[in-house]
Structure formats: structure tokens, C-alpha cells
Amino acid sequence: MKYRPYIVLSLLLLGIFQAGCAFADTAATKDFSKEDIRSLPLLPDGQSWSVEKDWLLDASAYKAQVHRTSKENEIALSNGLITRTFRISPNGATTAFENHMTGESIIRGVKPEAMVTIDGVEYEVGGLKGQPNYAYLLPEWLDRIQADPKAFRLAGLETGKTEKRFEWKRKRYSADLPWPPPGVSLRMEYRLPSETPAEPVGRMAYMKDVLVSIHYELYDGVPLIAKWMTVRNYSDRSIRINEFSNEVLAVVEYESSVESPKGWEYPNIHVETEYAFLGMDSEGANKAVFWQPDPEYTTQVNYLLKTPCLLVTKPPIGPDVEVQPGKHFETFHTYLLIHDSSEQERKGLAVRRMMRAIAPWVTENPIMMHVRSAGPEAVRNGIDQCAETGFEMIILTFGSGFNIENDNPEYIAQIRELVDYAHNKGIEIGGYSLLASRRISDEHDVVNPETGRPGGFAAFGNSPCIGSEWGQEYFRKLYNFFEKTGFDLLEHDGSYPGDVCASTKHPGHEGLADSQWKQWKTIT
Image 1 (spheres, rainbow, N blue to C red):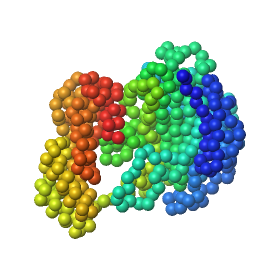
Image 2: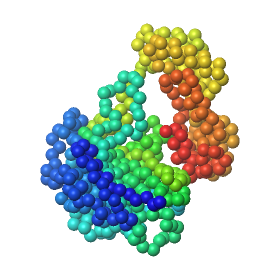
Image 3: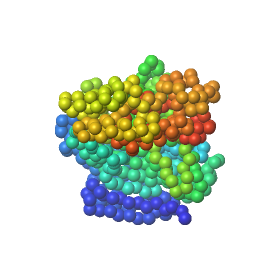
Image 4: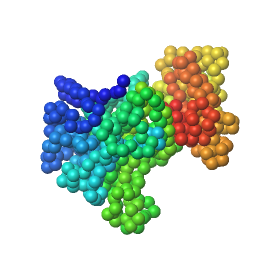
């Protein structure tokens, strides 16, 4: 039975309306209910925006909403600080992205909403073709540029509220922040239209039953928007997602240089994803954010067309994962924080506000003691000291002799007694474990794709592969330890540093292309 998508335009922000209508197999946007769109609040025109209050001091006026515009084929996400506008016919596409705090346009052109390579064929998701110049985007061009007949076509949309990515177990002091961050969501569904012209090599009939959803969340009181993609396989055969890009934005360049400087200045946007590793800060750890040249921007000042003004978020390799019939795949999230100043201190405060919105547990700040000996007497002494002096947490730290990989029942029972003793004193307790930056064996370490052997390329020289039998057993032991001892925390040293692995014998991944994604998924 083939899947038939439904449009559900749920005005949950008002809490009073929900409507749905079926779509034909053509998945054309002409089937959208105009009444549903007209029921949305009207987006103010460009002259009406007024950012009077500093959102870092008082953000109460900046509520996120889904709007209609003066065009029947447009909707927009706006919170008064930023607005992202979408065409919904002849295809879904971001056609405006405005920074109302500075009065600047963030984009200079229309690109696909995402890219995905399935079974070796690259597809654009949404987007419009035919823009005559990518230096800027004129409103009068929008009625002339057309949908790519080979691209995934907009088939439905749904609005609602933001949702929790997972439960936050509030068990210690933290700032009184909401979870999830309040705001609105928009999901736009895409599928290949039945009227697609001659199939390219590799495209099969089953692709008509693959649904791609692009998700957006816009938050109250902060110039921040999130985006991610899901791919649902409603066909009767498995598909393989070789690569994806879940954000593709033609951003206005931050500088123009005829020659290529040693270091370009990137647009004044903070870009974050949770696909991050091997870095002490966001810039170093963010492996999925790429500022690239835009080959369609042929009128730029740079002679070699190398200006980095195309923002793409994607994994460095892979994911190359198989999606079985009836299952789905979800990408990481991309977060765009739009700055209102180039002042470093203010930008830092904006990032701080962003983090407190999307990860409010960062405000937990327990006072912790590192105990240098895991001997029962030393640990009890440390617990007593914590209780007497106001410490809240104790860690059986590096070099203490603690071994979380020891699943001997006698050792488990010994640790359980210490946990009970700590909890009776009102103290949380946990311990240290080293994952990466150590060698296990040739069989279980990550394999160098150049040599076919471990060593010489990993972030810490050698590192175990999380997808190896050892890696799978390591995590089984960790789960077992926490479940049986009642431990409160894990101090994880060398937690996944982003290493790839070329082994084809490890049970947790198939080869090089999926090794990074699957190891990261294990950590998450």
C-alpha cells in the first residue's frame, strides 16, 4: 500500500484550529487549502518592523509565529527579530531571510532547502531555478524562476509548537528555564512528483514512495532558527542514504576581495550543530559547518570565484546508512544564530543566550570533588567532607583506581554500598572512564583508510573503534554499571573524537563511509 501524505496545518500557537486535506499523487502545491493559509496572521510589511527593545535585556515582545504574506503562495517564520520567508509554489524554497535588528538581508539567492544522495543519485529538495544573478535577489524575479522538475517537490506542511528532543531529568539546581524552548515549528514534506520527466540513471520507481521532511523551529525572544531533515522510506525495499546537506544558504558575503586572502571573514552568523567532536570550543568542534564558494555567483568580485558565501551543513563523510522499509532516518540539527553586532562581547552574550535556550542543562553547576583514591575508606571520607562543606558531587577520578569496566558482581556490590552511603548524605556520585586515546588491539582499534592498519591517523594516535566488538562490550559494561550501582554521573575522557574506521569486520559499522556517523550515534 502506497503512502499518501496529508497536509495538516495546525495552528497550535493559537490552540483553536486544526485542518487537514489529502494530496493527490502529483504532490502539487495547488492542492493546498487557501483557507488554511489565509487563517494565519499577516506578516507585517518591510516598513513596519521596529526592534525597539534590546532582546538581550527584554525579549518579551519577540514571540515566534507562522505567518502568511501578501502573496498567496508564501508563508513565513518570524519572531520580530528575524524572518525566514518561503515560497510554497511552484516548490518550497527560502526566498527571503531578514535580520530586522540591523535591517539587512541575510541571503542573496534561492537554493535548494536540502540535498540528499539516495542509492548513489543526488537529489535537490525544494528550491527554484533560473535566478539571473546571485549577487542579489529581486522580488520581481520570484514569479519567473521555476521548480526543477527533477527535484523533490513540496507535498504538504504542518505547523505546531517546539518539541523536546529528549527528556531533561532535572535532579539538581539549574536556572528556571523552559524545556523545550518556547516557539513554533514548521514541517515541510517533499516527494518526487509523478509527472517527473525521463528518469535519470539510477532513479527507480520506488523513489516515489520516499518522503523527505524538512523541519524548522523558531524560538521566542532570540534570533535563532533550527533546521533538520528526516527521510521516511514507505517503499517495499531498503534505500541507502549516502550523503546529505540539511542547510544550503546563499548568504550575502561578509567581504569582497579580488584576490583570495589568507583568511576570509565569514558572514556574521553563528552556526552550530550537535555533530561535533574533537574541540575545546564551538569553532574547533563543529565539523559539519562549511563555508564554500558558490559556483552560481559568477558576478562576484573575487577573480577565482572563491568567496566563501555558500553555507552548507553536512557530515564530512557519509552517513552511508541503510533505511529499511517503514523506517526513517533523521539528520543532526543545524542552528543559525543571527548576530545584531560585530562586537565580540555582545556576540558572546548572544551565544550564551542561545545555549541556555536549546540546552538549558548547561546552567547546572554542581560543586564537585575529585577523589584521588577509590578505596572504600577514602571515598567515604570524601563523601563526609562533601556533606560538611557544601559540595554536591563526588567523582572517583582519573588515577584513583576506579574501574567502570569491571563488571565483577563483588566489585559492583562494593560500589553500590558507596553509592548508597553518598545518597544518604545527599551527595551525588560517579566516576571516570577513558574511551579514546588508548590502544586496545589491531582487531578493535580504528583502521587507517590509507594503510589498512591501525595507527598513524587517529586524533590521539590510536583509539578503539566504538563499532568494534570491544566497543560494543564497553558500552554494555557502562550501562550495566550504572543500572546496578545507581551511579549519578559519568566523567568520560576521550569521548568520541571523530575518528573514522576503514574496517569491514567491525559489527557496529559496514566500512569507512558509515563509520563516523555510527560511532557518533552510539555516543549520542
